[in-house]
Image (cartoon, rainbow, N blue to C red; front, side):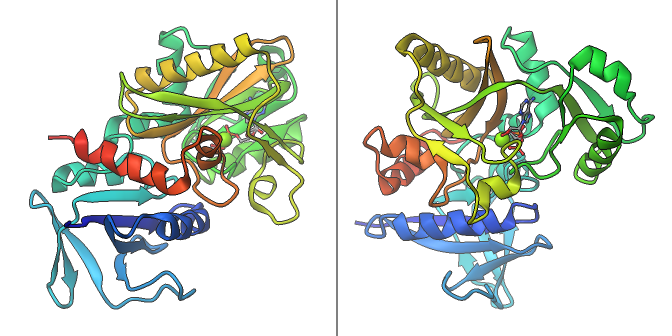
Length: 343
Ligand SMILES: Nc1ncnc2c1ncn2[C@@H]1O[C@H](COP(=O)(O)OP(=O)(O)O)[C@@H](O)[C@H]1O
Ligand SMILES: [Mg+2]
């Protein structure tokens, strides 16, 4: 049987480069190599694309660059000019120039199927302000917020505290892994938080802090045949689920695979996740994150179209709990991309 050729893309220009590497190592180890031949496409921090021989070498050095040939379904290597014709691209990338629709758009121009969401749903989901606007228009509740752009005057703390309450959260519209996110209680903290968030994005949002629980649902499939996992819960160890709280070895945060909720609340959250996935036009996969406030109001927090695949990541764990192993999950994602491609 001919194996399917997969171009596994990882690394990338975003602040989540290292998370991507860790996810890609897991995917590479788990993929069924009797069925798939994997080419390793490493995107360095400057955005150059390289073909790697292996993922063992920490330095990730290569002398072969890969260059897309638009419209032809191939990449050529530099300097040798060999062609690489993947049947499918598997992007294990997070953030800017990876999860934001850019690589998905490139795949579309190349005429190569790509695992996961297309250009449009990736870019909308990456952008927290755009996600909120689309969901607001569809009567899906998200936390009250204001948008701030880098060319505008410093936002007024007392006015915001009346409008949103205290604490508030300040975050870049397009970021991830909590990079650039702050919890704000005072005018001074707001000044610092706005400047930090703007270091990552010209557009930021200032949001009401929701006191409650953080719940996550994995979605898999192409609508209308998408399915939802059980409801997982994050219990942050820090003041919120910060970068260190997510990834540091001494983090005290907990990822609970089956949140302690009554059955009707679980069903409501799963139903909401499936609905949001369809509204945003998602395909393949996404992890949909919610806040369940202390007064039981459910808020969509964000949609991750390329959720983490590290050892500790919630997305594969949620499917594991449903009886889908890590390698079956990758197999399903690849098949979903191949059988329903962008023409
Ligand atoms: N409005 C909010 N209310 C309460 N906590 C929040 C709010 N916004 C963000 N957080 C906290 O910050 C973390 C990171 O924010 P999030 O919006 O999920 O950004 P990212 O895309 O970086 O993960 C969340 O997991 C949560 O702990
Ligand atoms: Mg998040």
